[in-house]
Each structure stands twice: as structure tokens, then as C-alpha cells.
Length: 114
Length: 108
Image (tube, rainbow over all chains, first blue to last red):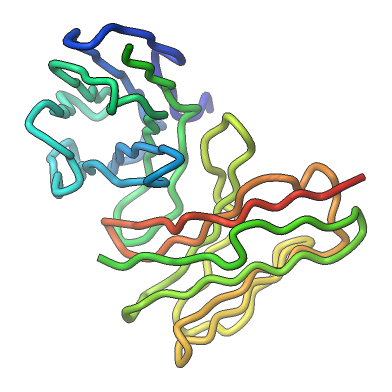
């Protein structure tokens, strides 16, 4: 099993540009989570999906952030327009079922917004 | 939402020593999980302990849970340099929340 796959691994962009982060969960997992990690705020849950349906997006910081999961094997997190304070490492994780199960994390995307 | 808080924030020990990290949380839980994060990597699940369990072992890891005190501890015995990482506890169900972590440094 390849584990959770995220792309790109690194992204450097200029303020105002659109950024799209991608995630492929582990096959068979039906829950997917997006996190953001910074030194100041630690690891924050942004949004999670169960069976491709967004369940809780209360962690999404602003309307500039949006996430989709068009099918069980793919999810995107989009930031439009990006700002320097969005610079962080963004992790995607997946798990089997929901309810406090073990989550498997991807390697993360390090985003730098200049 | 529930959130674990780890203590201490940082811990530095010599190889071979034991490392103990603590986690406190605020509300009732069904289970509590511990994760490890090596620098520049994603989190890796270590162990899950259910609310009706008091202690659980996995290799050199020992986790305890005291629901009356709303606290958990992670003990790593006979530490190795490779154990150097940040350790997080997490509580919650679907909306699992992580604490700020304990940064463990094991000196060879």
C-alpha cells in the first residue's frame, strides 16, 4: 500500500495566486481529513469528509479556503487568493470509518506564500 | 471540541533512559491516541487506548489512562536516538484534535 499521497510536496507562490493541494487517501478508507500545521498554531483540523461528503468545515479559516472530494480516491484543498499567512504545512489524513479511529497521514505539502 | 494538551513542551534525555510525556484533556472521551512526528514528516499513529482501559503496551511504549483525572501518559522505555521526534496526544471522534506536542530529544 502506497499510503496517503499528497502533491505537490512543496509549493512556493506569490500572494494573490490560487493554490491547489491534492490528496489521494488509502484505498478503502472512507474518511479524509485536511490539517494545517504552523509553529504558532500547531496542528489544526480544517475539514473532514465521510464517504466523500464534507461533515465539518468549521476549521476552515476563511472563505478563501475550499475543499472538495469528488470521489473516494481524490480530494483537493484550494486557497484563492493566497496570502503570506497561509504559509504552513498542509497534511491530508485518511482512516477507515469514523469515530476516533487511527488516522494515516500523508507526507504533507509545505506551502510558502511570498 | 476536545483537545489534548501535552506536558512537558520539550524533553531532553540520554539514550537508554526512559521518557515520560503527559497529556491532559477536558471532556469525556471514548478513546485517546498518541502519535509521533519526525521532523518534516507526517504524523504516525503509535497507540490507541479506549476509555475503559487503564494501561496498554506496544513494544517499548506504555500508555496509561486515568479518566477520573482526564489524563494520559506515554512512557518510552530504553530510549534510542531514533525516538527523537514530537509526540502528540489526540482526543475526539470524527473531529479529532491534537495538542501542541512534546518535543523529545534523545542524545546518543
